[in-house]
Length: 416
Image (cartoon, rainbow, N blue to C red):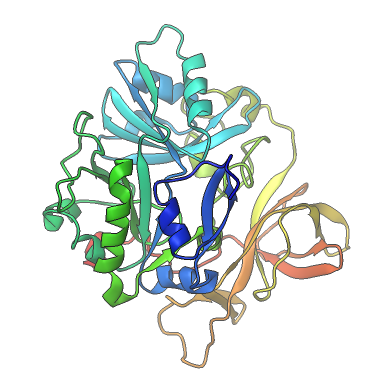
């Protein structure tokens, strides 16, 4: 192991389990276990999987001017965000480029938490501090002070009900992108959520797979036990520990971006995630002022990001070396992400998934490559492309969405 890499509290568990480890954002993280990426991916779509996400960082922003600071620094308009809910968006610089995407959690009018990507705790805390000026707010980078794991899949709530106290109460009135509890008894709390051994946790109904599930924040010294307890509680339904390989293929199929790969140091416009911008009703402007606003309004960059699906499970490397060719074999861009969603296939010129109801038993779900391209011209769904790197080339189609019949937004009552 590269001794310069950071580790999560679950690192030794991963190694004992035979995980294939690699550098991800400066952390020594599992790519996959002996089960393999395909099995791990499909376990989330058919039952449940758990992910070590302790490489991500948390920042608390507290004080009477916390809302004003965050609303100016973040792309989403937080005016409608209520206590107990969280929201996805991005932190931009003055050029309108993404520094990092993030989720903001609101405890009350003066207490918020920001969850950012690996290695970005100090960067985003510094960005907030630099824009604080005379505002009365305190910014605390909790990097390495909070552990995090995700449980995703239709059996997530049933499994969690075996390891938390009063699950019926916890799971009542818990819509998508809401949260309860806190990982520290000294911090504000939206109703308590505790493990059976009384450990406090913050339980968020969110995730990075497109499927029903939760993200769990807790003390670093408690996560190994919770990880093992959840595996034990879910063994009868085939729960699987999942690495970053399955996390990547699941999020790609769910049309979710990877920070610094699909959104990054380029204009935060013309992409599938424009819901993260505070457009007014007719999309002629924005509902608030925020860092990067003027750059977005005056943009003339002319680049566009689109989701695509390949013909089958064959894929190409992501990166600028993989060209996007139009029907005239002209290079019009490059591939940002290319992964294989093993839970989908083409049928009658449409993508279906293993969760699609009414499929004939003779339809075999074999997997389809998918991801995002950055191009220099506007394209419509159905547009045909070739993705080419060296001698490897695959045919692809621009799509409006990728894996159908995802479960993330369905009512929790469907899964109890």
